[in-house]
Amino acid sequence: MCGRYRLSRRKQLVEEYFDALPSDEDWTPRYNIAPTQPVPVIRQNPKEPRRELSLMRWGLIPSWSKDVSAAGVLINARSETAAAKPAFRDPLTSRRCLIPADGFYEWSRHEAACVIVRRALLDRTCHPIGSTLRGMAIR
Image (cartoon, rainbow, N blue to C red; front, side, top):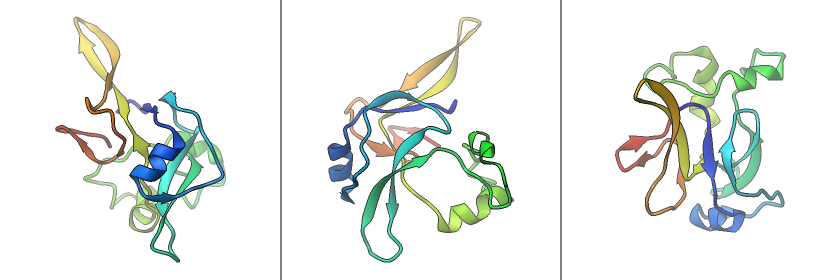
């Protein structure tokens, strides 16, 4: 994944699809979401067994960092080594969330040129990042 994705669904549809509590925050569908931008996420309330929808800034700020600019750097982790890396170890075990997406972008080589290709489902539904889309994994 090149660090960009899209969410072309409206707030109400995402809330219904993930059975999440409604939030006061609203967003417009976007087709080129980049790191450090506010994105809708679904997270579990630790005190109640209900999912919540809220806007959060995309990126991981390690617990030892004093500068928020690190959030734009830590956006991807390899699933094989994420549990061993200090920046991802604690968030992986206790601070997880779902990021609704209906497409993502990746680099592809076409006749000696690199281009960005959009990958999306044919049924046009929302799926969380990390799920499998007809054989393609969004990480």
